[in-house]
Image (cartoon, rainbow, N blue to C red):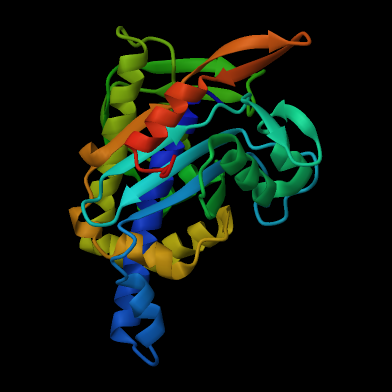
Length: 301
């Protein structure tokens, strides 16, 4: 799938995680049995920032991934639980990295060798970070959650027509210009459309922002809360995570103040190149270290 769609999908996942957390907070707050330790974790202000790694895969069963699967998308997500400011740092899948027990290879091979746990360790070892949590998610998640909220209204900027039988998965786009409510399948078409924007990448970014903003508004509607069980089901079905639910709730307890303009995207600095006739992405270690420190993802010397 195109890089644009993959980048958007991380944003949508964040919105759902925040919403799921707010649901959990509401339910537990109103059905308290033995809340002391749990809520101490949720309201622990010693950790102002929650960070996790998003790994995107294209599989039918995200919880029972077979050997041979590689993570197609890897992003570090860091959220300030007080202000809602969110940083998404793209980690190129071809990053030249040392994978424990397998030497130096492309970073995304780590998922093949040891699943999300080894990928988490490899990213930490490569970047010098200490991120503890991950979320693995399948791209079918986007289609599912869009249908759960009864579609998302957007203004399609042009007639969108495109077919590619060789794309993975095959791509068939047929949308008309104008304001309309897109179902899950149409949302995928809208988000994967690449040709025709006058300002090219900027146009696709604007489409991404429009859809994400409209989706966030839909989440905040009272009637969407009635669909909370279905959103929870989608979260359970399409994600696998080691993140404690108390952490998810901590992210979601201030959902009312969450804003799209608070999300900032970054890419680890470096360059593409070849080693032994194989293409890799080579990190600029100094620039990467500087970026991670600016975002409070690394401390110390």
